[in-house]
Image (cartoon, rainbow, N blue to C red; front, side, top):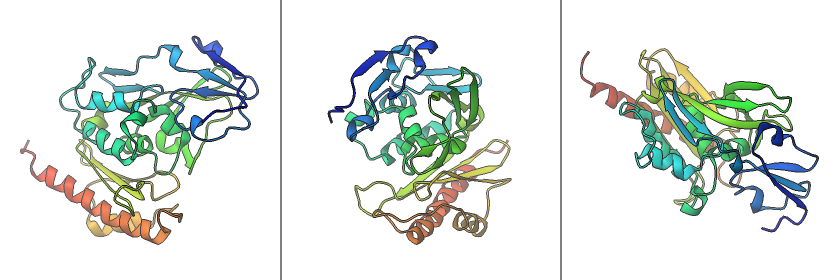
Length: 282
């Protein structure tokens, strides 16, 4: 779509270039910005020229630049890049499953960025599901020059809304090595076979025996449920059904989203339980 109100475009190469003038917006992939009119936008500031390493691996975990495309993250998880993940990062199996929950063509994957998906903060955002499930930490460059960190699950405050203030920028997402080593599972559902996800439930089993389940798409913002051990189905269902934020829209009613989320949660728990049972004794 032609954004007819835009009269300026500039590239950012230093943090000083990121100070926005009135009417300017940050631009990375631009798949949402270019999809509909932006009447209040008069200029774009290109983030891709900042030269951020798209994926960095060290002993602390994985750092994903906000400008990393979904396609590159999927390729990394599949071992197709020059940057390699440790062999024991089992939770990377979630990456292609979450990316497919976006229901986007390969053309979108090659343009849409991880950071853009998070900052758009749609309830059914694929990268929201992934990063919230793995306790991803958002690294935020504040407009005042400071830096802040918060869980991605806390960054998203409502469907289509984050807690970012005007001029704030998502610099990167950091995923801890401990959660990347955790066995994980994802189940999703849509009303139509090729429809947008109406509910996504993820779960992981950490090394200390604790279990974390995350509900997205069915709720207006991520709901993270933590248990000291893998819960019984009854305890898990009770927690999922009591979660806040289930909503209705043309792609699903709130009571349907609540009901299918509890079913998906049981399936995720069964996957984790089966995987745990198959592990060799210490």
